[in-house]
Length: 152
Image (cartoon, rainbow, N blue to C red; front, side, top):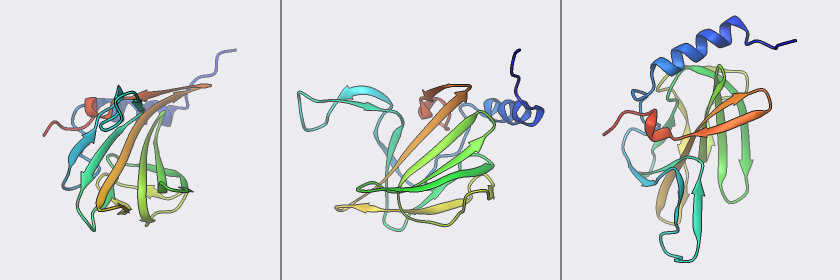
C-alpha cells in the first residue's frame, strides 16, 4: 500500500514551497562566504569542498533566525562546530549550525524570523552554516538555500 503524507504535512509543504526565492536570510546582516555544492577549497588547492548548505559570515553577537515557521525537531552539539538546530516545515527541514547557544527547545514551535540562538565565533569569524533539506520516506535531498532565500 502507498504511504501518503498527512494533510497537515501537505499544507505545510505547499506553504513552504510557495515561498521559494522569498525566504528571509537566517542572519540580519551578513555575506555568503561559501556556496552550495562542490567547489575548490579556498586555501588548499587539491581539496574539493562539498557544501550541503551555505555559510553566512556575520557580525559578533548575531542571532540565527528561523527562515520559516515550523517545529524544532532537533537541538544538538557537534564538537568543533557548536550547537545546531533543526526546524521542520512539513517535508522540509532547515538546519542552523555553528551556534554558541540556543534559545529554543525540541518540540517548540517557531515563527519566521524568530531567534534560534547566537552565532558562535570561530577564531575571529562569526559564521552560520545553513542548510535546507527535503525529506521523503528513506530519501533526503539537500536543497540549494540560495534558490530559496531572497536575493540581496
